[in-house]
Amino acid sequence: MDPKKATILIAYFSRSGNNYVNGQIVNLIKGNTEVIADMIRDITKADLFYILSAAAYPSDYMETTEIAKRELHDNARPKLTDSLSTAAPYDIIFLGYPNWWGTMPMPVCTFLESCDFSGKTIVPFCTHEGSGLGRSVSDIKKICPESIVLDGIAIRGGEVTNAQDTVIKFVRKIGIVL
Image 1 (cartoon, rainbow, N blue to C red):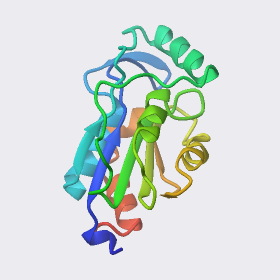
Image 2 (tube, one colour; image 1 turned 90 degrees about the horizontal axis):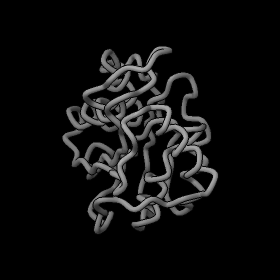
Image 3 (cartoon, rainbow, N blue to C red; image 1 turned 30 degrees about the vertical axis):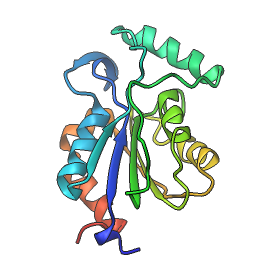
């Protein structure tokens, strides 16, 4: 497959509102991961799919982190508001999420298990405040063993507004744009 001719989907989970950024709780109108997803869309002209948990997370950051920790501990699969009917039209799936407790949020696991991604190339991208990709790439490989999972990119949440060049370089590195 020629990556420059590939059909691309950007599937992402993001959380606006109270978030931890640069050592403090701030209110984000648009979640950090969504900012990066939009940058990738601007570069690739790909389709977007927003992974959204049917049960909204609390607006309070600390309450959300406790729920996220419990979901991870319980290996939960939260219901989503929408599902991707098929991954068949896509060759490459950019998969975006914040790093929660060392990996992706559990709604992302629900998404990955809801569709057959066999033979697809999955390109992880995450936002974080010091944890990088954590173990999310290996977790994606466990859920999608028949997919090609690239190493991905991690962008610090406090740096997303200035990450355009980093994102462009990454997308070029994997061969999608010149």
